[in-house]
Image (cartoon, rainbow, N blue to C red; front, side):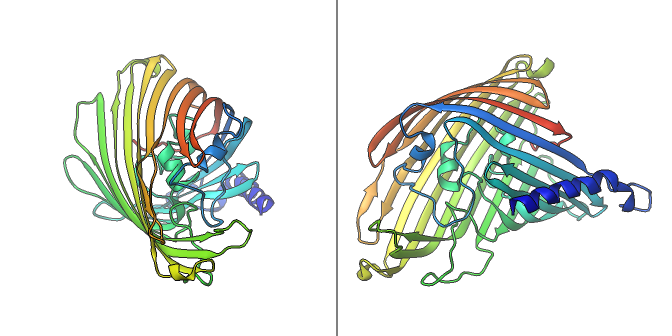
Length: 414
């Protein structure tokens, strides 16, 4: 499969570059001529402790392991890491449609990260997107990793949405209101394929649930401020089918199955100040998000304790992060991020047991040098306290990231 995707990318690139005169987008003579770019993301990481940060994140109390076989969990390794090479294609198809495709290749293989058809001429501020896409839920979910201000995700994202966030086959519609300030709202429907939030099996004894299995909605509001200032608030919500399969006695055989829903909601904000100085000196970006998930699953079958069938497992989890980025001099940025996951972190098991877990936290300091818009080097130090079944683990991390962009890449949202 990985070789098929790579050959497809190379073939598509050849067609785009050498065959662009074969298709016109209008009678005016404009040619089908896409933007093509490749972003290469590498970093070195070293963590304190004997097990490494990837293992610790899988053991955080209350959040546990991922479920099902969805996704491509490839957490950071100790030492040298190649995160991905992101191959990006985009083009105005015709007066009615815009399209883009993003293929992420990494050491384990490759997968289609996004492949989207987007309308461009609907009336009344309407827009529709279809294909494989990122949800506009929250602030960071729709951003690719190369646009992050830190090398890694905030804890609450990693623990509740996994490495790839809410990214799935879906259909999304948005509406830009005709107001004198920015007001954009949207609703999205996804098939339902996230290893943490909406894992799905559908095989007996779990019921089959026809897709789409995840529904999300969001609202973005930005008041009119003086030209140097930009501010945006967001609110999001969603619900999705979630199924879990467990091996309760660790004998290598699955023995109980749960089926139900996860509900999630969040708020976010971002403030930007443009100093008007050269190369970002004196610029500020303040950003934060709060995220909460409530789960309600019912036991469909339990081979070890049949009396638990039809009983419920409920859990509540939340988290937030706050970060600030400042242009300390031309081409140089310093960033500080504080985050917690599990301020609310409780569960009620099918046997009636109630558990509450302490929150985990992490602080990060990043220094980024951007010689141009096509590259950056980032040094980051983090220290976290992670609550696990074996007690509290204090882990320090240091990473050095190098990223380059080959070719023209589309502009990012505010």
